[in-house]
Image (cartoon, rainbow, N blue to C red; front, side):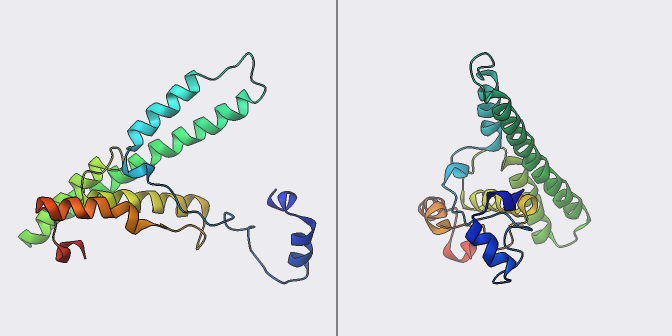
Length: 178
């Protein structure tokens, strides 16, 4: 299917062995995501998607069924990333229950708390913003087998407001941010 989309020049180069496995095993292109995931949680995205499904024009839009299928797929992914985080939270709680070191135990409880909040909700602080990014990144690379074609790009710009706010409020230090 991917090969149908490629130009004749690309196909010639591929056949000649100039490059291999380009997009046959991985998603095409490089992406730098915007900062949407730092302002909305996946519960918000789910509401938006459900509203878009309700507003589909089944009588007049010839592409409505393709749009519906795409929106359904988006809904599955949005719900899946929340469940993925919930599994991390559950594991962190299990680890906390077995942990003897009080400092590590406290950290594991915090990890569980963060994972139960993001990605369902928008991050409120630096730690949550990092965790939100990580869940989204893992979700994308796991689903698309992107290997090296998707990266956080502009992560410094996206995380800086959370970093700055934490420093100003005294809830974060440069050392903790490392």
